[in-house]
Length: 343
Image 1: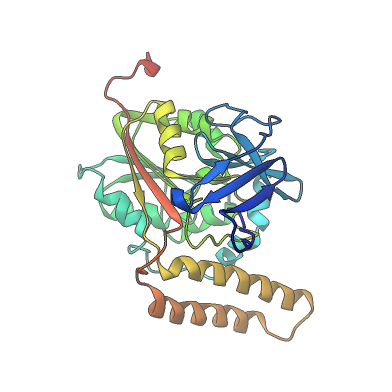
Image 2 (image 1 turned 90 degrees about the vertical axis):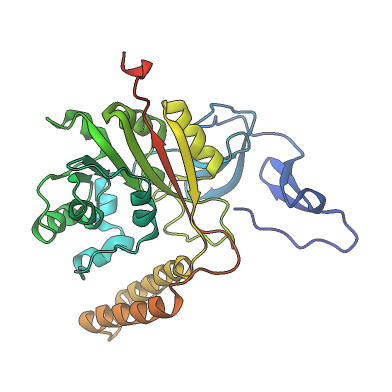
């Protein structure tokens, strides 16, 4: 999150100057950052609404990157949705139109962890918000769930319907959920790497709560702020692609305030594939630059090279590393059987 400056020999701590505030890293306190100077009161936290504890840590294009020391959330200002066309044209998702993975990602850590906590009951209804091309929904359907999905990317919905054979998938954003006829109560709602994209995560959490049946389960995965090594991608981890980066405390606060109980936050171990993602994103930028400069690498060869390189690296690197903190948090929570919010 914060780049450390080199400490001078003999100093007691590493000082980091960040706009209107100054942090000190005290080695005697396990490397925790402590506030030394004034706050930035221009913005309040989107979770706890505090403005005394909010600090501007970075300027990114037209955005302020803010951090709340009270709930440990990183968020952006402004929090303005870039619109659906942004995701239709976003280079991060360009492979959707080039290559469809026929096999289902059953080994995905998020999916495996989620299913560990879901009760095995026949014909449970499951809604996946931001369902993408329907890969997770296909896995859930094979496990006996009655599945529903929504996504803002039309290409993804076409693949989910025509390639995956999913019927109850629709084009739209999360704000459209309450308008869809018949979509009123679900036993399970999932959001895998979606929350960080929305401009109003509190409203989304409240909407999920209202759509869940009593004793229903929500599963949410988000990118982790306090990952280690602290590797962040300029396209993927900053606005307008990601508005927020999360810690366990921030995610727990969001769900508690929305009315959920029995909240459990699971930290993904650091895998070599986490680092591979950053290599892939950087490679994509190189390929785009080649195309922009009218390079001689053909489209088919480019796709083949990407696929081959990723396949080889995955086989070599898909194992847990012995150091660091993973890039993902996954929360599992329950809606109370009786909730005053529904009365």
